[in-house]
Image 1 (cartoon, each protein chain N blue to C red):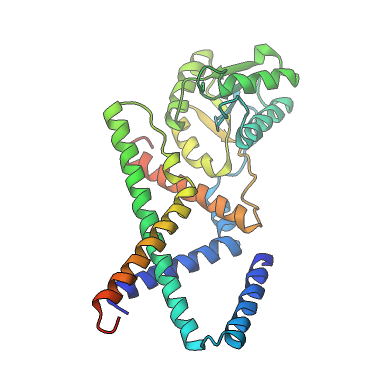
Image 2: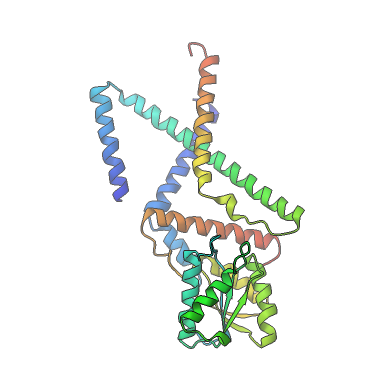
Length: 105
Length: 205
């Protein structure tokens, strides 16, 4: 709960600074939350794809080498961070591409 | 917002909900208690301590050390005349099993009561190698030491290899309260669930 309180306090502080000092609008916050969920969804998709590929490579490796190849490296925690980087990059690219093709974008 | 965005948004919302549930509620603890095997500290022919991992410089991991100490304490309680350590060789160093046996010996366990097995690299191989090592010595009833989340699969494999198994689980995570520990516990539970599915599909269990 402690970390949730920390995150809550800094979020409220940023909200107040954004609205009072920089003129951000409430409606834009809702759009930002939706965009964050899209990025999170894409992170999960990349993570599951990376994980599935890792498991497949290990299983094929076991079959070809007829020996032991550990499955544990395929689920290394860094995979989450790297999947998030992939998601942020490709989602940004996707949005740039959409703005280019959409009228008025 | 297109259909793809809405789908990704739903996946993201589900992921966020799952993260909050795992990190900030006792859900993983409940799952761990439901999934784990209760300890059966009864007299046996041997105490078998399964491998965890060892670093390249020969330092035992926390899991490895915890399992080894649990095995030593069970031996100290007089529950079995033999203490058997499993754990493979890394590079040209001594095996994890040998490092643990050496530690047990330094802590007062007689050399004659110690055995090691250092060729198995998976839980299934551990069960098969232990059967080859122990059953000719008349060892059939064992106290099996491994982490709680790893016990169900291990027990099934050792029973299939011909042992009568009494679980002696090491439990350091099922009471986890910090969010990071709960995430780690959930990761172990998910890995074990996948491993059990794989072992089941491969016909090992």
